[in-house]
Image (cartoon, rainbow, N blue to C red; front, top):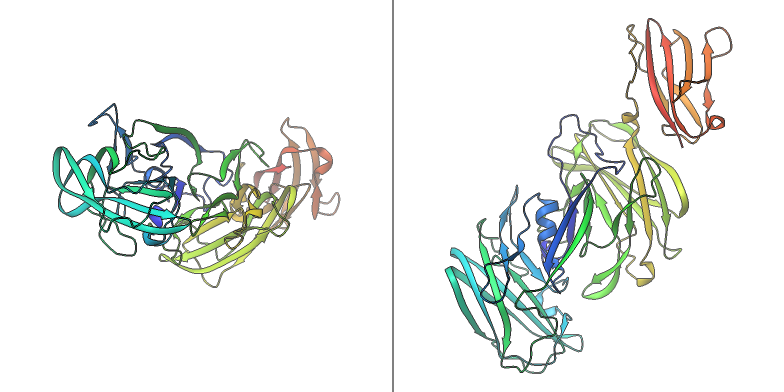
Length: 482
């Protein structure tokens, strides 16, 4: 089945590239909060794609324009920057062609057909679709695509007979609905933006009872609050596996990714939580190029981040990948394993690219895709303070006027020892003060040899200021001791 119906993507794209960090919100201090509302018992919907991935309104909503009762479900096809994105809901997260789908909600009757009331607004070849897949004993015993098309401004009765009829009684059924013509494995258009389906009073015919979880009158809805890190895309099933953590290495928050129990080929499986500054296209079938990224032009640099990792099984490992792009294409990528560590450690990844990039994507996840055994469920990765070393040079004082202001301090943040790189022979004074202004270190030219490394760990954790007088200029830099 197409990627759009498989994944729950969360994230909010940053539209401005001017002056933007190559890893925006890499300290995970900024989060967006929203409420996701889905029809009860249909957790897999397009709402997360719409709002977080494309920054569009939710397109599966609770409508008061009902045929019966208080509510109907309304699905709309929206326009993204590169495509149209249809609305959908389904009661499982299926993979592959519908003739292989199994599971869903329990049901032990063989219906003759379905019945529903609907409105639709498109007079083209486009149509909404109801998808049914019945199974028994883990085997698919019948699937159906029921199209609802044409302009129906008033509620219209749909009565559809299942052809061919079910040859045996199922034990479960999958029910899905889309606002546009969709069939797995085929390349139909997604239909025009604005295609809208209103659906109410969905039921099976020729039976004595409906599935207990069907909620076919759409009176019951599930609402939940979600906090999402700004400028990051997070792909999980049903919004599982990620959280805003207060266990931060610096500041207030960090990103927590936890391997969760999802499904693979319609069977329970461990699925690693994934976060990225890029995104995959909606039609991705697994072998496709990650899109997006943020401006970055350094051929040589170092990625720096803090992390802690608690695997559910000793064989598990987390993962980080870096993609360098030019003219929209990835020309270099590098991945590394993140091993177990109970406390935060700082990790550095030197980069030496074969050519100068124009953008970069960072991708992290709590485990490996191939580690699908359920023993890996619960592996937890917490990451914070992701940035490039080149971003650490942020002048806070007065730059030297003699052109000798290219020095930098590293590592920053540090656990104790810092080093100064790029100092000229014109350094006449160097001093370090704490937040209160108290001087904790000083150097004057000619008094002692110039310092190589300076150990700040004896002065305690906190923020310090390094002031260097070089030639006719003075510059101050901030350094954090963790």
